[in-house]
Structure formats: C-alpha cells, structure tokens
Length: 162
Image (cartoon, rainbow, N blue to C red; front, side, top):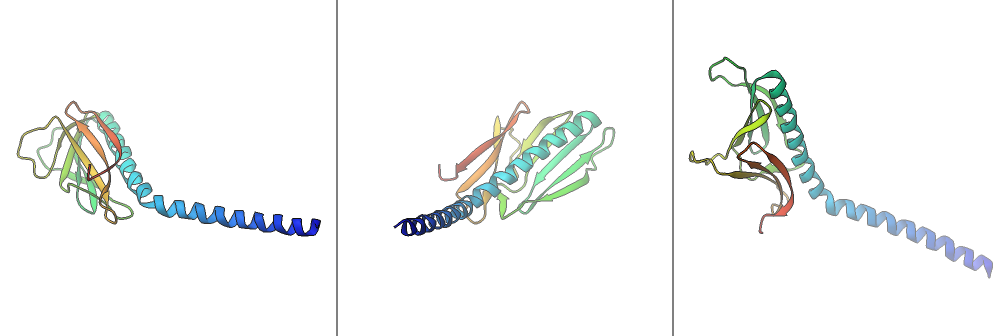
C-alpha cells in the first residue's frame, strides 16, 4: 500500500509542476503586450528626464518629435538662430506607436516649456496627453500627461474606448 501512495504522490508533484509551468507561461503571454506598452512609455519618460537634466546643466534647448515608428531629439544651442540639429533617434519597441504622430515637446533649462500636437492650430491647451498604443490591440493605451506649467507624468494603462 505504501508503494501505491508513493506513486500517487510522485505523479501529483509532476502534475502540479506541469500545471504551474503552463500557468506561468500563459500569464506571460497574456500580459506581454501590456508589458511592452508600459515599457515603451517608461523609456520615453526616462528619456524626457534625461534631456531635462541635460538642458538644465548645458543651458541648451531640446525638442522631442514623436512620429509613427520613431521619435527624434533635436538640439538648439544658445545664441544660435533657428537651425535645430538632430542629436539622436529612438525607435519604439515591439509594435508600439503613438496615437498622435507629429506630437512635439520642447525642453529648456530643465523644464518642458511647450508641447503641441501635429494638428494644433496655435491655441495652447492647459494639458495634452501623448498616448501610445499597441498595434496588435489598439484599445490598450498608456500615455504621458503634459501640463501647461511644465509638469508631466506617466499615466497608467487605460482603455481607448473609455
């Protein structure tokens, strides 16, 4: 009888391990798109922080322009006329794109001093949201809220239908 119980316990452990592996891999694949969406938004936020610090210490102006497949950072040195120089271009990872291509922000002396959408008609709104979406499941969105005083924050994931 004890041999029978030992075999059942051994098979139960194997079944539990198989169930646990299937559960973990299933969770991974269900949350994969949300993970990559949040990862891209956090990367953009970290780079905004980086260029705020650089503009504060170097006393120059940066512009970030968000396009469909990439966003680029341009530099305007103090005392120069209007020729912006491209510094770096970043691509979005894992099928993520902005909902409003053409969105741009300018950073000067450590703060976001202006933001505008591509279809902006000159009127400065009190706030704008730069939202990102997964191209595989467009209703899943995450974004960055820009306020008129130069503050900004990353928004949690939200549904585009709400």
